[in-house]
Image (cartoon, rainbow, N blue to C red; front, side, top):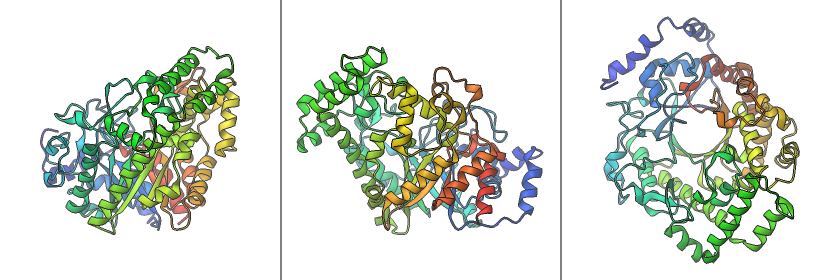
Length: 508
C-alpha cells in the first residue's frame, strides 16, 4: 500500500471481507443482540489489520466476536509480536507474512515533545502504512461504538537510526548491544516523550507499556523460556557506564562484578555441556551466589531501574491527564521463573500503574514451560530429572493441575492455571491496588524453538474456541477486572476469537 486516503482505507475492509466464510456467522452473531460487559474486554491489534480489513469492519468483528469494548492498537512497536502478520494465516486479512516491517511510531510524531533523545524524532515515524495515523483515524470510530482506546507501546527500537547507539546497553565484555538500557537518560527521555505526545495529542483513554526483559544474571542462567537459544552468556546486559555509576552509588562492588559473571558463565557452560561439577549444580550455584552477592545485587538493580522508568512514565501520564490510565504488561516469564516472579511485586507495581495485564498464555504456555524447564534443567537444577524440576516449579508456583514435563508441550497449560494466577495477583496487589487484567492467548504462533526434544510440534495443543472460552471464564470467575485478547488480531482465527465472546456474555 504506497498511498491511501482515509475514505479508501475505511472501505478497504468491505471489499476484503465480501463473500468470506465468516460473513454469515458474523451476521448471525450480530442478530443475537449481545449484552455488553461491565469489565474491560480489550484486544491488541496492529495497524496492519486496519489496513488489510478496514477500520469499520475490524471494529464490528471485534465487538461481535469478542465482546470487545476496548481497543489496544500497537501505536509504537518494532516487533512482529505486536505489529505485522504471521503464519499460519487465520483466514482474514492478507495471506502475506511481512518479515520486514519497518515499525516505529504508528501515530503522528510531534517533535516538540522529544527533547535531547540523541535522534531525530521524525526518524521514528512508521512508514508501513503511509498517510494512516492509528490513533487519529481510529478514535472517531471507536467513540461512536462506545469503545475505548488504550495505546500499546513496546520496549523496542530501530538500532539502524542515526544516533540510536546512544540509547543502547553494553554486555559485560564491553560490546554494545541492540537492547535498551533503562538507566540511559536518552532512553528515558524518549519514553517520556512518547507518553507526553500520545496523551497531549490524542483523546486516548490510556496507555499500556510492554517490557519483556529481565536482569543479566537470570538471563545468563537460562531462567526463561527458550533460554537455551539465547546466545552466549557473555552477551547479557546491561553494563553501560550509567549502570556502573548507579551500582557504585548503591554500594555494589562493581570491580568484582565482571569476575563474578565470568564464574557464572563457566557454571552455565558446564551445564550446557552436561559436565557435572564435583558438588553438583545446585550446590555450585549457591556457592557462586554466596561468594558473589554482587550477582543478585545487579539483578535487583536492573528491576529497580525499570520500575523507576515505569513511575516516571506514570507521572507524565497523570500530569497531562489525571483520568488517562497507565498500565503494564507483565511478561509470561513470571509464570515460570520464581526469581523473576519475586521481582514482580504487584503491590509495588501498583504504585506506578492503574492496571496490570498478566500474560497468561495457556495454549503456547505448555511448550514455553517445557523450554524453560529444559533450559534451567541444564544449569541450576542440572542434578535432577526434568520431571522433578517441573514438579518443583509447579509446587513453588502453585499450579496443581498441569501436565508433567513429558506431556506439557502437547497439552498446554490449563484454564486452572489462569484462575490461580488471577487469584494470586488480586491478593498480591493489596487493598486499592492496580486492576488485574488477564492476557488470554488466542492463536499465538509457536516457534520451533518452543518445541523441546521428544515433543512434536504438530501435536502441540493449539488454540480452540473451547479452550479460549474456558480460560476466559476462569479468569473472570477468579475476579479479573478485565481481559486482554493477545497477542494481536492479525493472527487470530475468528472462531477462536468468538470463544472470548462466549465466556463474557455467559457471565454478563
